Length: 400
Ligand code: GLU
Image (cartoon, rainbow, N blue to C red; front, top):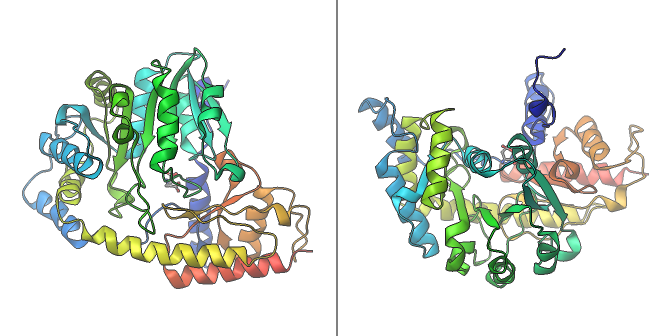
């Protein structure tokens, strides 16, 4: 009999991490690999933030902190969210965890009973459904295709809600599509949610500072303060401040749930790294201009990627408003054969052949609950992104 629990057997490994690890391994073998698979900024953590981490070590801030983060950091996080979104969160509503992923995990584990349903618009980030499964809930995947700009509509939301619905997970800008909801689109969703007082909302805002062409990116509680007492506003420093390895995520949520999440964290990981907390404090409370510089570069890359992918025969790519992802359709490539003789039967076959024949690593759409697409992360040096897109173009041109 296997040692592995039934609970874990039902869970898939994170495909973004699996494919990124595969690309790293091929590179280590000396292969010419360009990885567009990881959603991870190529920039270094800004100097002032790194310095705060070094200072923390030198000042001996190397001990346990409060489980949910130091009071100073929680206050600074509340201030940051309030300043960005016009909300009025207090420090006791904040928990700081080991990355945004742990925040979501805490929230689901702290709230789901067997059979509870969680509405997840798809395409969605790979980890949402599996976290729900781990926590004993049932994911209700709502396909939101390219025809609706990959976005959940009020009609689709209404149709997905049942008496068992406990959560809606919303992610704007979205991983893997990069699309973001306008304030009007959020308003329409809020109106449905106001009619269903038992449904909670987890809004994953981790990419909300990475938006282009002056897109106005708001969060649920900003659009409808009446939903504040059943919303988890989640964010973190990983993407906006190029701090993926520091592992700091956080949320603002009603005190009862925040305390429950903290209880769970206290029995699993305890506090997030004290040094990372000191760096995160500088990130959220210090100067914010490094974000602008990174956003300007991402925007240029987005334009290059979208334009180059649309020039590849068989691919079609909508222009995303934010994050650092593009999510092209491979519809025009399906059924064709690659130069090396592989048959493109689906998106997984497409990315597998792409990696083997061109060295470009990307993640297939099915991993994000939407077949027929693949995700490209352009958080990679501009010249490398261009080279990768050129290889993708040649790959597509050679299909027959
Ligand atoms: N969120 C990033 C991605 O989607 C990092 C990897 C992960 O945790 O999924 O690639």
